[in-house]
Length: 256
Image 1 (tube, rainbow, N blue to C red):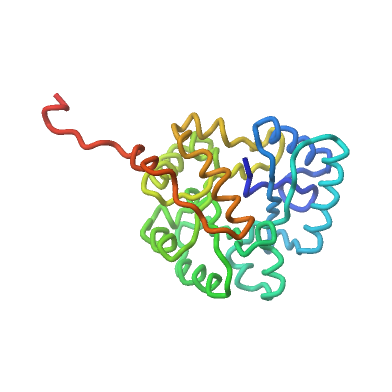
Image 2 (cartoon, rainbow, N blue to C red; image 1 turned 180 degrees about the vertical axis):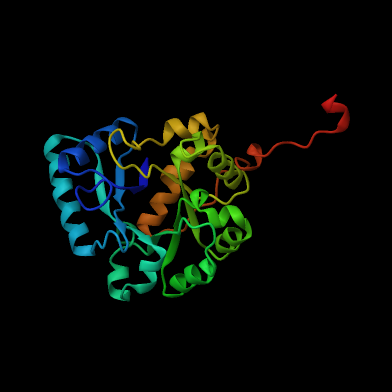
């Protein structure tokens, strides 16, 4: 699997504090079937990380992973707060893409309302970047008005939901919303959004299985993220897999 959203770098955000913590996270990820992790430290007003720091830490971590015999490759990326993405110079923004491709992982605000969020995301996309929306299932503004998210997906943006959301780790409302998004074809990727080996650990396959989404697992955790990293065309989901998740209509006589 490819983990497209993971806070694996040490000491620069709310992920591991030390490189030993990063290695522990990578060991757990490898044991769970992950072979590639995209390091996505926060880039925000609170965590003003820059491309040079991220690249240096990715190189150092990959050296240690090889030395420790941990079969995981880490690639550079970032989870960019929406407001920061609008303020950063274009040259710096271009160096914060996922794996050096054209896609940016953008974190929407956690406020109940976010007036103009659609216009702001479209503005970023007009700069020539693909936009992956991070954990939309946890964005209160999308809960309040899902049509905004539907518009953004129709506009060509991708969504990446957190595996833990599918099994209730962020509450029942988030779980129900996440599953509804999957059933309605509004989800393109499931990532761990891990922050440590035990704190929000880097699991995906187990959560997908528990949520009944195993038929979509390869598409969500391998095929789509590979296209995002390699610059290929994002493939469609397996034929019939999403439709099979939707409840069948039952006739009155079947409900007796």
